[in-house]
Image (cartoon, rainbow, N blue to C red; front, side, top):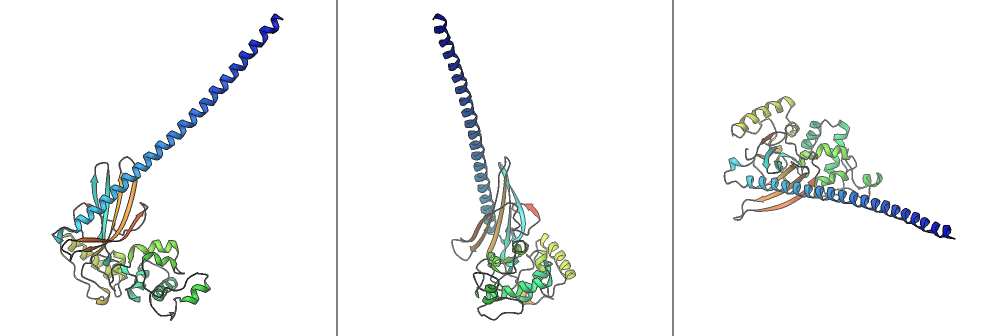
Length: 317
């Protein structure tokens, strides 16, 4: 009887020990899970903070560009040719570029020859560039007459699209993606050189990229190379290059516009990056200069939105 009484307490102690061990194991699992969740939340908070700080740096780049564009001395303003300027800020750096929209080909105003010239300069195959040119013209005109390589409502419907030709001007360059011949890959190739904001049939060759200069009707590769070489020399000494006399004046613009696209790319020293692309109209004629935001987009840092490839110190022109 005594032995039997002694056996039960020992069993109870064993069961209690097992229960304690299971409780400790469960607590360890819960603690590990909590620690893992907390680490993930800390990393997430750090990433969100870095992204917010990078975005603020990018906004600072846009504001710096606007400040430079409002300098009283016009000679000290950015030229608007898409070159990147570097601005060092505590905790990071910002690269910003200013592109005058008159340095791009306007989708709504460019002549068929200028559009075709741009696609030739981009080395797009002959059948496709004819299709692109005529399709753009059919999209923006107000009639329903189909060009040889273009497309009107029946062509869109036959291709399975839920829309026809717009028969009105492009509201944005992104509308190109609604054309049957336009693919996302092709769009990325052409978008840096096109605009809907200049409102001019020609481009300013003093600001345009070499590719756009080569696109001008009557501008051969050799002539383009010579003009660009002279243009760059004159630019470096602060002089304006003359308009190329062998190009039809209807495809040229010499006056500076009031619409600019600013691209700011920010990178923090501790990690985090952001890019902002803003198209703005300056109201210089007003007593109190104002700014109209036409387009504001936060883009991927590697997005090929700007054609500027030269780095200069912030404030230089």
